Image (cartoon, rainbow, N blue to C red; front, side, top):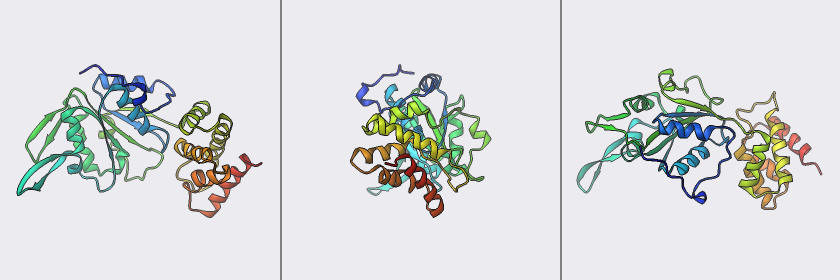
Length: 268
């Protein structure tokens, strides 16, 4: 395995560590271990992977998983062009051949018969059999498989099989502590520290709101959106309604409850 190359700071996407996650990820890469990242939407999972890929000087191939994702979408397929048939590698195969991180975002959204193709890559074999070409690819020493999902937003039919889950080193993410989230909001939006503190306090209040039909809570990503709108001159109540309340619910009563909390925080 090649030694990691730490990219210039300007080339590394901003990520604020909250623990030892960066060291854990790098250790997993050095030992050629696949990584599973669990956490709520908007807590920084994708940004973290992009940050680590840049820190390690590795190419990053991201696949957003969905119901219609097939094994061929990952591995590749035969195509017809110029009167001939040729093989075209999928994103997973490209990463296996050339090295780099293949990141499967929201992997539970993919069909189970699709995720099975990952199994030979997630044990000591580190191989990818390609049935349609007869190849058995050995993964590049610099190849790393990373998958993520939101455990709080799963249907009984959309969860990882135990036989798949136990092939990964797992890392749990959550929304950062207020002081860390405050630093993130200031850094990402350019808003002043005072209004950033109000937003982070508001997020804590909304996350503790119970008794309403909310599948998800206010994410750090949405806080940054609200802060950017405010930094652009939008009134706090309008920015928070647009970025924090409306994206979370279509239910009138739930929306009214969210807006009541927002009004309390930003009352003149």
